[in-house]
Length: 382
Ligand code: GLA
Image 1 (cartoon, helix red, strand yellow):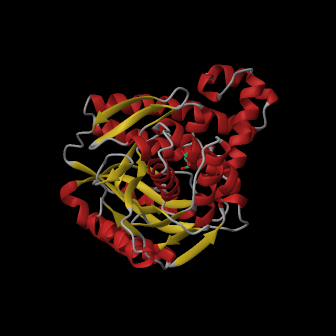
Image 2 (cartoon, rainbow, N blue to C red; image 1 turned 30 degrees about the horizontal axis):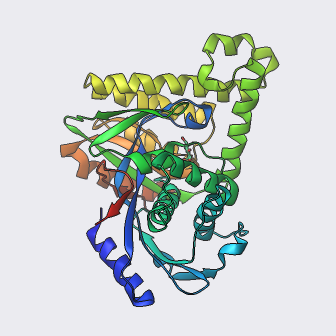
C-alpha cells in the first residue's frame, strides 16, 4: 500500500471536514489466467496487488452526504433519500451504486463525508472500479456497524456494478480485491466461492504488466453481449452454466448454434480447463508451462472470444517473438488495458526498451509498464 497516498487522502479529508476519519484500503487485481470464465461460474486465478483505492470516511451532522474524488478534483453533494444511477455519471455511479444496493438490503445509513483516491491507472484493466466499490462498502460497513460479512459486501459491490454502472460483471474482481492474499494468487471457483491460495515461485522470471494506454469504448456493451451469448448456449445445452459443459457436448450441438455462439462457448470451456492446468504448473514450478497457457489463452481471447484489439495483439506478438518472455496475454475484460507477461528478470529492462520503441513506431504513442506485488485484500488502515 502506498503510504504517501494514505497520507494525502487523510490530510485532504481533514482539510475539508476538520475531523479524524476512518481509513480503508482496497486493492486492484491482476489475473494470471481465466478470463470471462467468472460469469460462467468457472475458475479464475487472480491476485490482489499493492496498488488500490484509499478511502477516508466520517459521519457528519449536516443533512447531506459529500464525496470528494481526489484524483479528478471533483466534489458531489447529495441526499441519501434519492439514490439512483446518473447517466454518464463516471465515478459517482460506483459510490451511489454501493449506497443504493446497501439500502436495498434494508441497512440504515446516515449522512457521511468521504474522500477517495488511488494509484491504480484507470482503464488499465486492474479493477479500479471493484476497488472503489469495495473500499466504499467496507468503509460504510465499518462506520455504521452494519455487520456485513466480506462475502455480503462483495455482492453489494457487484450489484452496484450491474445496476448503476451497467456492466454485468462476474465476481472475480470484487472477490480478489476483498480477499487477496500476500504473495499469492487465488484459484477461485466462481460457482461456490471456494478458494485455494497458491504461492508462486516464478524462479528467474517476473510478472510485468504492459499498458496499451487504450480503452476502446466498445468494452461495456461487448462484455454484456458475451455474457448473454454464453447464457444462451448454456440454455441450449440444458445446463445452468458453461462451467458444466464439455467440448464434445458442444460439438454435438454445433448445428443448432451460430458460429459465434460455438466459438465463444468453446473458448470458455477451454479457458476454464487452462485455469486448472495453470494451477498445476504453478504447483509443479513449471513456469514455461504456465507461459504456454498464457499464450494459448490470448489466442482464444483474440480469435474465439473476440475481445482483444490491435494494440493488445501487437504486444503479445512482440512478447512471443522475444526470447526473454515465456508467456503473455491480454488481461481483464479486453478491448484495451494491459497485457500480463512472464519475463526473465535480468533481461527485463532491455525488453522494456525494445517494446517501448516498437510500440511507439507502430502506434505513435507510448505504452506503460508496471511491476506489481501480490498483496492482501481490503482492510482498515490503522
Ligand atoms: C472484467 C469483469 C470480471 C471478469 C473479467 C474478464 O474485469 O469485471 O468479472 O469477467 O472482466 O475475465
